[in-house]
Length: 205
Image (cartoon, rainbow, N blue to C red; front, top):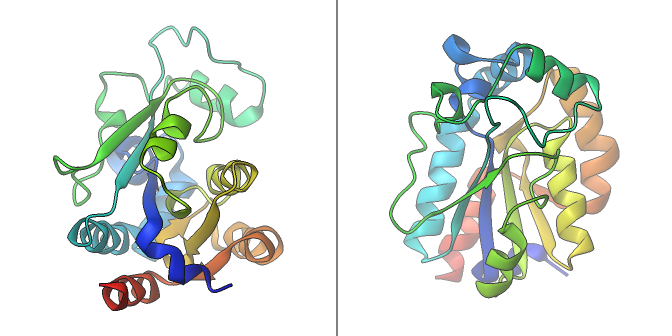
């Protein structure tokens, strides 16, 4: 099956494209910020979002926000412990704002996650996708190290086909990104580019 043929039944999931992860001034994880900026994922994601909106397809932002006291967050791994130590991504702070260049439009959806490690945990993403009657998910954003694989597995477990434009995601380094793309993402998803997704959407019109 050519999964790109399902794009007319897809949603674009933009994961954690927030100032605290993608802008150097506010960054809580500088490695991810540096890699995302080097790869220039923001303009590619913006182009994807514009193409989805033009086709009347859902654009969904998935953001992480923590309470000031981190209540309800399990400090059970080094990554979360580091963010907790840095008091990162606190609700109401500039860090949780979506980055310039990816401003949501009135037709878009915003899903907020207050705990956990993956997009489907502790929010209404699953019911939203069900009610939108989607069959395919296009994943973009950060990070290749954890959140993108988590979304991939969560989507597969729920019966979705997964498309990943590889030039619209980033991780902690190019080495980590390449290894995860090759050994985890490629066997489980349709790996492509943002331009190929946009072209396929246009052809489906």
